[in-house]
Length: 366
Image (cartoon, rainbow, N blue to C red; front, side, top):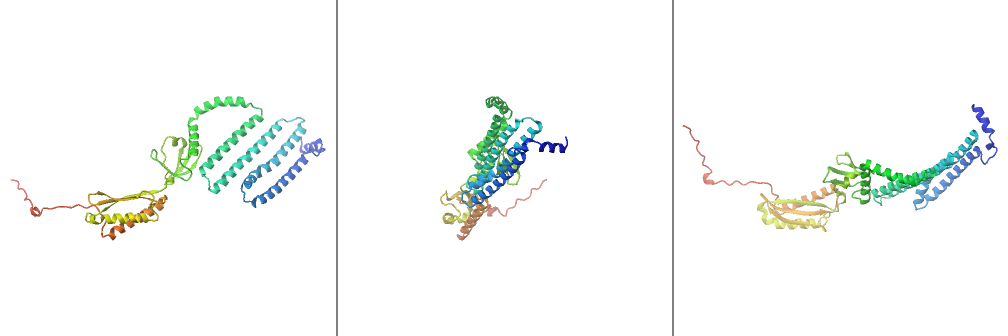
């Protein structure tokens, strides 16, 4: 059949005589509906921009593209049905199922966009834990998709009872075949809900060679960036069997140093200790509410040792070393101001003067 014959057949179609059912009328109505939606969206957008309540912006942005798609696709399906019915002189029942499928898809699309918009908005506010927000959004998306799949099956007349029965047996088989995958999945859930660490934390494990900054927590594995900038991909099930240390949640960092004075400065030891203790109590970066100890500790091989035990207010690694350096420099100044000095390893040799000049004569062999 030529194109001219198709055009003549279309022009002779009874549907063009009935404007409420004609393809042309449906197309024009779709265009008008789309224009009205665009005007309504622009009006609502300007209205929501003036309000301090942000959730209306989130909902409106989630509706924008799906509603526009529905305005064109739904009438397009009706027009396609009219053309096919007229051309083939038969009814296409599958078009009804297509419309149901389209409605479900549009509804799911709106919900997924809404979840994504809410997630991005909450993360931008930086008032909630990033790991928890991502976990809740992933679980919500998964529930929406599962519900959508079940709805589609029910819309096509499938028995959910038989499906659930088959799913129970099939789930057992799949669970045995993919136990590692499932253990990683539940390991990810444990991380999300127990929250031993979150994205951005510095973690390490004394049981494994794992140390670095957490970049991403997925359903199957966690990505850790080591300090030499290498990515480390760790299956989530590993964290169920190892000890994880999270230095990022430290409240203070400890300074624990032993310093030795010369033995000839023994009479100045008490004064030095008292001044060092007073300096630490008044230091702006030392937490005086934590344990603070400065005491004479031991008689060393070549020094009189005292130790300092205190905590900084900062937990930042770079700032901690700056504070520690300042503390050690002030301790050195206190020691020198008291006429003492830091000891260094020495050895004393005692020589008997009576035998100092005696040199044994070499033996002569006959």
